[in-house]
Structures are given as structure tokens and as C-alpha cells.
Image (tube, rainbow, N blue to C red; front, side):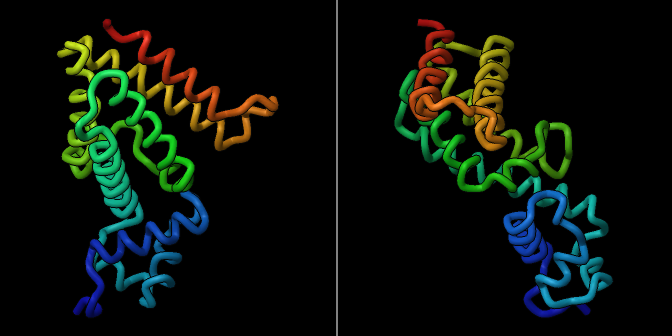
Amino acid sequence: MPRAGLSPAAVVDAALAVLDGGGPDALTLAAVAKRTGVAVPSLYKHVRSLGELRVLVGARLVEDLAERLGAAVMGLSRDDAVAALMRATRAYVREHPHRYAAMPLDPLHEPAQAEAGQRLMEVFLAVLRGYGLHGADAVHATRRLRAAVHGFTSLELAGGFGLPEDLDDSYQRLIAMVTASLPA
């Protein structure tokens, strides 16, 4: 019988705490079991494997990011929405660097993550509709936008910007570059 209070969602919560404390490499069944106060075999009543747990964690991460970005762009359009989306993503990465490192890059192709991935994609597509972008043009613009944000934030987390110029100013210029690339 599963331990009272322990469920797949609670196991994912514990996995996120492990992830926050030590990064993606720290996420093991043993660490999650310790965090939940059960033996590793007890976790198998809630998740089949570490692989499945990582997929469930990835789905939660994508869902959380989609929710945060959706809230950030609500009521905004065009350049204001793009700027809000980019700033909210950067804020998430800075607040949760280990979660971001564990986030799946392409959740649309993992069945257990596809629903959350679609919600995240819809946030991007909704922002880009303000520019009249649909179909392939919207997909290409989403890829540019994701690449710009991911590249900057990944370099920032890794300490890849050693020069003294202000990073916030650099990011604002990146936002301006991205918005300038979108249709007038």
C-alpha cells in the first residue's frame, strides 16, 4: 500500500526540491526517497523509474514556465509582450537555474510532456499573432526568440559575460534586436 500523503505529484514535488538543491545530476531515486522518508522500492508505487520521474518533472517545469510566461504577457501586445516574455523567462532562469537546466528542450515530442509543451508554445504563438505571424512564420519567429533567450541566459548562468558592461543593458538591447526582427 502506498504511503499516506505520497502520490506521483508529491514525488515530483520532492524531486523538484532535490533538483533545486543540487541540480540535474543530484536527481536520483535515492535522493527523492530520502526526501520523502521512504525506501527506494516504495517510490515504484508512484513512478516506474528514474526516467519516468524525469519526464514527469520535465512536464511540471514546462507547465510552470508556461503559466509564468502567460501571466507575464497577459494584456500586452507586440513589442511589450515580447519584452515581457523575454524578461519573465530570464527571471525564471535566474530564480531556478537548476530547474531550467533540467527543462526538456522539446517537450512536444514526449507524450507525457506534450500538453504542457503545447501550452508553452501557445504563449509564444499568441504573442507573435500580434505581429500577424501564423504558421511557419510564427514557428521560425518562436525559434529565434527561444534561441536568443536561451543563449543569453545560458551564457549568463555559466559566467560567460566577463566584461564589466551591465548585463541588464545587454539584455535590453537583445530584446530590442529581437523585436526589430519582427514585422512592423
